[in-house]
Image (cartoon, rainbow over the protein chains, first blue to last red):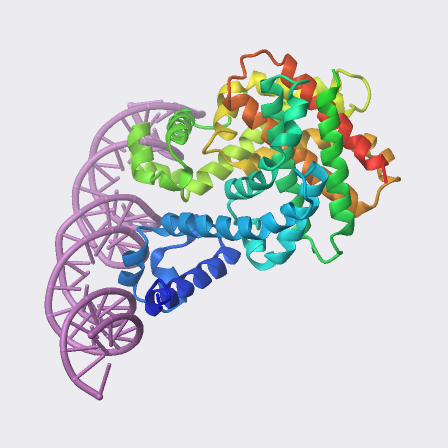
Length: 194
Length: 194
DNA sequence: AATAAAATCAACATTGTGTTTAATATCTTT
DNA sequence: AAAGATATTAAACACAATGTTGATTTTATT
């Protein structure tokens, strides 16, 4: 008989704030958003905002934390379905599927005024699951090389996803997923060469 | 007999502003820097700042524009020395050389509080010179694939450079350049597969 | 030395911030 | 359904940074 953990009022308030925030983020970068205009957009009192968040950046941080959880919950089933530690190609496909399932919010996060560092952390979520796979590779490579490799592939992936989302992701995932898989595979091969 | 195009005073003032700005950027993100503290750090009057820039972001934009010119002037000689349209591997090496020549400022631009979009534009500067080279590839690929490929490699490159600069670039360029070249080469190969 | 231009200083209205108070509205519990 | 608890509101507040202005001083240019 434990009721919904939180007061109904705060859930509504937070929902209004978040909706207003993402709406504003479509139009301008975060540094151009004031608490005042956010509250006007959300139709709530400014004091109420300060009851929940210390400032705009705190709001973003909290939103990102919860979004990260959402994303993990969406991604895990995909990853688990393979029945073995996923290969890079599988993770690639799964991340794309995950993006499609959260298209609306991802368009903001990866959009012009999104938080690219957060995008990086989202991607890292997937690649961490490849550690077993990478473990085998790292015998051949120095830790330094692994570190640089990881930075290249992760950021590259973010870049590709951004392009994909911001220039009509509606071409079906086919072409993009296929290319992404090939790119990642080839990058892995680069680790073997010397 | 045309003197230095600008008044000596404004050159000094702008230099002080820029020095203070990069100094502050080492410590905090741009959105945390106020005009007031910037002027205090630079030791100039606040009114003087507004005589040259409209706000902090205008300052950054102007600085980036000029830095872009500097970078082009440094990069071009490297690229021209090959005597033919540069290959991706050559551009990769040249960009690293260029980074080493501007290490101090690049550490800020690519640092924690740098402007990643600007970093992208810097890298694009190099890859544009590969267009002849890429032209041959694009026969094999769709425009859409080229676009996504380009996003992947550019962002990946930025990620690798950031990692490289922020975790002791002093290990000699050898290992990093070598890996970067292999990665880029392999990515190009990914375009040929289907 | 005379003129032009830039930097300074002080003052000002404006705006957003973050906090506080009392009053009101809404939820939860019995 | 009533009582108590808690969230939201509205108004006021001190504070800080913004962006502008005008008079004054300093520094370049010729």
